Each structure stands twice: as C-alpha cells, then as structure tokens.
Length: 358
Picture (cartoon, rainbow, N blue to C red):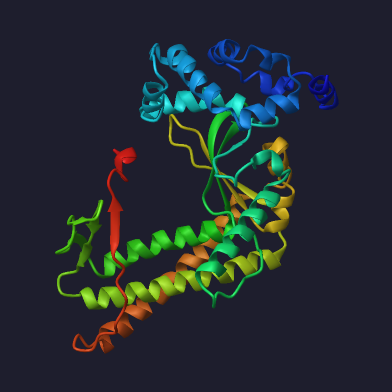
C-alpha cells in the first residue's frame, strides 16, 4: 500500500509523451523481459529506477539488449559484461541511443555522464548550477586536503568539458557542457600548442627509462627532441602554461562579472554523430538550465555564437603576441650553462590502463 501511495503522489502514471516517443521496440522488449512492472510504475519511480538500476537487472538488461540489437546471445554475466564494455564505435552509438530513454530524465531524456557520490544521482539536482556548485565544493575540499596553503577561490561556474547525452530537437545527440571561460581556455591552449610547434619544431622520443618495469606497471618517460633547442623549448612552454592559467582565472572572473546570463549552442557534429557544445556565460545561466527541460531552457537564453567567436579571436591575438615576445626574449637571454631546477615527476602506468583505448 505504501508503494501504491507513493506512485499516486508522484503524479502521472507514465513517462510524458514527449519522452515516450524515443523508446525503441528493442528497449521496450528488453525492459518488458527483465522488469515488466516498470510500465505500471509512476514517473518518479521509473526515473529512480533508470538512474540507479540494480546490478542484477543491469546485467539482465545488457544481455537482452545485446540479443535485440546485435543478435548476440551470452550465457554468463561475465561474458555479457566483457562484450558490453568492448563494443565498436558504431555499436556504442546505437547502444547509447537505445538505452538513453531509460537512463535519461525529463523531456530531452537528459543523461549527465558524470560520477556521483554514493547514493546520489542527477535526481538530487534540479538545475545545472546545483550540480556544478556541489561538485565545485567537493573539488575545493579535495584541493585543501592536498595543499594546506591552497587559497580557496569563489565559485564562478566550473563546468569544463563535461559530457552528456540527450535529444536535441528530437534527434539523439552527444553533448559537451562548459563555461565560456573554460571553452576559451581550451581554444587558446590548442592555439598555443600549434604556435609553439611552429616556432620550435619538436617531437617526443622515448627517454632512457621509458617502458621499464616499475612494480606492477611501467615507466612513462617521453622526452622532447627539439634539435638542440630543448632548453629554450622547455622555458617557453613553462611561460605559456603560466599565461594560460592566469588567463583562465581572469576569464572566469570577467565573464562572471559581465552578467550576460546566456548560453551558446555550438553544433560540433561530425557525421554520422550529432554533437552539441553548450557553452554557458556565467553561474546565473546555470541556474536557468533545468535538467528536466534542458534544451528548452537553453534555447530561451541562447546568445549568438558570433559573440563568443569574437572573444576567442581577441584572446588568440593576445596569446600570439605574448608567445612571440617571450620567444624573442628567451632566445636572446637563454644561457644553456645556467638552468633552473624543476622537479620532474615519475609517471608509472598501471598494466592494462590503456586497454580501453585500443
């Protein structure tokens, strides 16, 4: 009786018609086979199930979907788990599109591809800001634990290349979520990398320790070969890194203070994939983006992408000027006999760490 009362209190008996249209026959049959009562539950219970499917049901659903989508039949959970984790890119796209209506919430079947603390999920957060600020506080706490001298910074929005999946105007899409400051930072970092390579052509070569066994892993020791200009290269790269970090922090403050309260919707699709980058101007804009009506809310505060592209062009011009000035200064003053001491980290790669990338 308690469960019936909760379902009644939850409101509508089924997922809204907008979300229901995304359910494929394959997904319907798989859920019907594993958890047929799902279709009698109220929307809140359906959503709670979709974002935190019990392990036993998850394995059974994977088995049913592998058969439905690809005609593959496996007897054990271990076999199912291995195959489900190693689908081809084309198969992954079909899989992601098929399961999204079950895992996603709201009218766009929004799914945030992020890790949550134990017993928490996307349903704990109504807006994008609620999630982002919560995550930021956790990260700040971790930084303070690692460094007693860490100076806390105010929250100014912290989204940076977060991944999501959803339906945009009825079409399955991958999405990236970023703050404008973070998006610009990524753009100037790419531009700096290209310009550095033009000024000082270089490549990475294995160092003397690369590939050596280290406990249960192996050493990663790749060194820069710049045909005798390694010292100049390293110094210029350090100056570039410092500049990028300073600009990122300055951009976060500048965009927060500008109070534009909007979002840029950038179509980054590369057929056959549909991919959108949602770039938010400041923290107030995150408050206006609700997970249950994500695309509609973003469209309501959408700003012209030309505005963002203009800001990026300004930053790239300033970056180029800075790098060329630094390069001229370093080449004139660099003394190969005098080198600053910089701590070089030892990097040990665990066995199998890159297996998923093969």
